[in-house]
Each structure stands twice: as structure tokens, then as C-alpha cells.
Image (cartoon, helix red, strand yellow):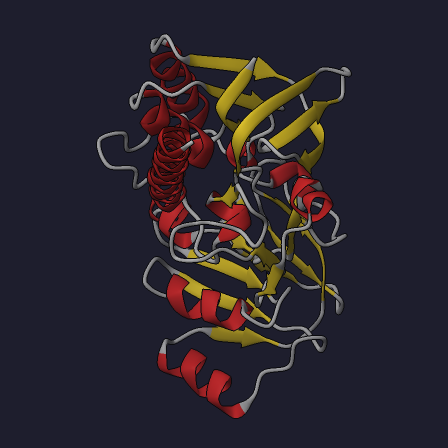
Length: 309
């Protein structure tokens, strides 16, 4: 069976796009490996009408609502290859199955490459965090740390000053220039220049950040901006162009979420620089509208061609 659209990635961008397309009565298949980026966090925050709900609950409800439409289908599995065809695209899964579609939406997200600092991984999504808007309010004030892990870490620290007494743990790898130092001073962020070596305490709680000179700097939570990479090789395999960002790469799209490859669209964290549930959902919905428009244009052209013949 050929689908009108195959959506690879069943998290917020993918399911938002799938729901829109299912409502157009088009045949839609969602392929999902079951590893959403926010699976490490127990709750989601700042989502209109769903504040403080578990992300897994939101996705389960969204999937059920999508599958209530007769033209909707869902496959649990990992998409490992994709290729363009005359009719559209073909997607291959790890179990050997293949699916054909007229359009493909890549909504596979990104992977956070956590630095190799003892104590980070076991606290990721709980007390080691990346998004102030998603998690900082729940810390409840007090000392909050920011590890310098990218060239944008000082910006993250300047934001967090609204939520607590922020300490910026500097790194020689990402030196602060005069403007960045002045920004942190204006935001009353304390700069700690001694190198950090570990995060300590009874996980997932944090007692503090261990410094190279032996001191323990107390913090209640720690924020990092981990470098990002594509969570799936599909976009590269199929020939999509990428744009460099300050934290990694993103799939290049136009204003209607079309990639540089015909019939292939992209949405969500893999195709944007700003990441949260609301933005990913909106991006997926926009991609779906664009996919529907392209299907209509193709159907109309085919019908007019048939009449002319």
C-alpha cells in the first residue's frame, strides 16, 4: 500500500503533523522507534493546557487520537534507510519491512551529546537539565549551576538568573570575552573559574559540583547546553542539505518545511534551532499543511494532464 505521507518520528512534531494530515482524509503512516528526546524527564512544563503532565502521557494520548482516524496507521520500529523513487519515497525498517509514500516528513529529532563528566548521565532530565523554560521554575530558587559546555553556555547562565542564584562554571575551552563577562555581571551571575571535575550527591539529587581544587560548590540543579547531533541518519542518507547552528546542525528547510530533496519535508528539533514541545508541535503542523498543499497540487496537475490526453 502506498501512503500519501510517511512520518518518521512519533514524538510531538511527528504526531502533530500526522494528526493534521489524517484529518485531511489522507493515508498517513507514522513510524516510531519509541525514543523521544524528552524521555528522561518525568514531567513537561509550559505546554498550554497540559502543564506538569508527563511527556509520555501526552504522547500516548496524541497517538490514540491520531489512530482514531480511519486513514491513520502506526508502526513501532526503527527506520534505518530511505530513498527517493519516481512515486515519492521508500522507507526501510530494521526488521526488513519497506513502506512507500508520496511524501515523507522527517521528525526524528536530535540527540544530546552529554560531556564525559562523572555524575551527569544518571541525573539527565531530573536535576541536570538543558531548558530553563521547561524546568527552572520547579527548582524553587536557590543556587543553580551552569556548566560551560558550549559557546552559548554564558547565554544560558544569563537567562537562569531569573530563577535563582546562578553560578557559571567556566571552562578554558569556551573563554568569555569582555561582552559576555559584562553580561553575566549585569545579571548578577557569579563566575567560578576553577575547572569542574564531577557532579556529586545521592543521584538524582545534587549536592554540588566538585572542583579541581577539591572544593564542592553547592547547587540544587545544573544546566548544560549539550552539543546536538541528528538522532537518525535518514536525512543524510536521502541527500538533505544541513545548516550549521551554534549547537550542531539542523536539516535545511524553506519556510514551508520542504527540505532540499523533492517530496521530503522536515520538522521539529531536527529542523529548528529553538526546541520545546510547543514549538515542535507547531513545526509539525506547519509541515503537514505544506505536505497537504503539495499533494493537492500534484493531484490537480495529474487530473488536468489526464483530461488533456
